[in-house]
Length: 149
Ligand SMILES: Cc1cc2nc3c(=O)[nH]c(=O)nc-3n(C[C@H](O)[C@H](O)[C@H](O)COP(=O)(O)O)c2cc1C
Image 1: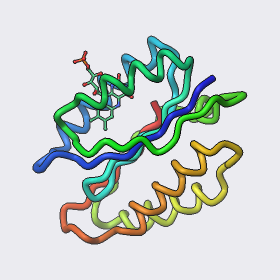
Image 2: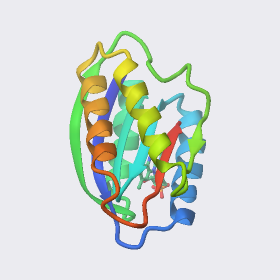
Image 3: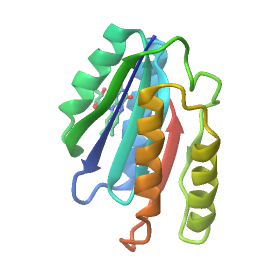
């Protein structure tokens, strides 16, 4: 089992429709390759962790890097792991609005603090999640999307 995580910045003017398209593509493809993980989008930042067979994870990452809907894709960590950490998450998609954004951030930060962190990739993933969520309220157009894929 292999885990990889990266962060990136969304292209200017990315809309909810683009995010939905990304999620549809990701869910369909990843399911076919038995890849699990989590994708977070907040304040123009993406952070994603992917886990599965090494060649499948690297293959997805190569495709994702070429995607024009984001840029500055930076690999944070890649490592072999004993087991999946996101497989037990049911498919979750949450798109908070302005009213519940604060609660969303609080809940997710709590989740990140409770999460199992026995791999470097997980540690670095949750550290990035906390960083982008703590950076909140910079832009009036705040969207947060969490999806386990
Ligand atoms: C932030 C981000 C995350 C993505 N995550 C995935 C993913 O996990 N799995 C996937 O198949 N595609 C993902 N995509 C979409 C791929 O980049 C790509 O558009 C899609 O796989 C179709 O590739 P193709 O046009 O080469 O067939 C993601 C795109 C972005 C911008």
